[in-house]
Amino acid sequence: MSTQYWSAPLIFLLDTLFSLYIFCLLLRFLFQWCGADYQNPLSQFLIRMTHPPLSLLRRFIPAMGRVDSSALVLILLLQILEGFLIFLIQGGMPSFSVLSIWSITQLIELTLNIYFYAIIIRALLSWVGPSVYNPAISLLFSLTEPVMATSRRLLPITGGIDLSPIVVIMAIQLIRMLILPPLQNLALVLN
Image (cartoon, rainbow, N blue to C red):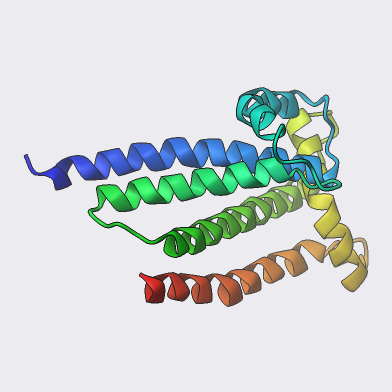
């Protein structure tokens, strides 16, 4: 069997494993940044999953205010490593600049996806009106409230209907259309 036969499943496994861990790290970073409940069971799960490498990095990379610098560095390094391994399996040897731009593009897209789906889920939950405390819903509200509050200042609640999720979703889509294509084109040009 050819090497291409094995490369697709290997890339799938690498992408899945790296993406899940980067997702956990990014959620931990975002929850810490927005001041989510540290004692929440889901927060504790993310902390336990991501603590070993972060505790090592924190010895060398200090936090800057509310920004966990070591988490950002680890996220970027893992994304670069994933890209390097995927490009290597595909038979290419990308430059560090291409890997960096590709990684930043992937991380911006992941962050935008997290907020896009979080806002949609929050809007759907507002129609249902969950009254029972749920740790996931608590974290969802903590994560989305900073952007929703900013959006509410632009478009206040009118007639009892909160249209601020529409503003946030439109902003996410505009950012996706305006920022990601130039970064992807830059990576292609440098490759």
